[in-house]
Length: 100
Image (cartoon, one colour):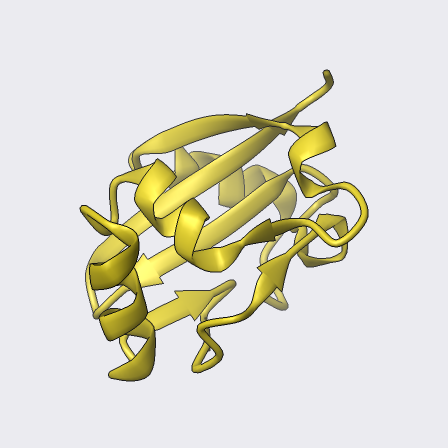
């Protein structure tokens, strides 16, 4: 999300469901996008997450993601500590990375 400050992002994030994840989970190859969608509650299961990705309804940092094999890692973080996930037009979730 270009053009947004961290402070503005945090204001918006205060109104979006946020889940914490240890930084170690995103190290190296990272974590499966499907697993993260389930972890945040955007999808009830990996099967549903796979269908949603295939249908083009999943976004990572407001960029449509069509790869069900997509691994999410530290390089995908916004401001070095957030992941913004979206399902459809209005369902947002944030993963906040914690040390540990």
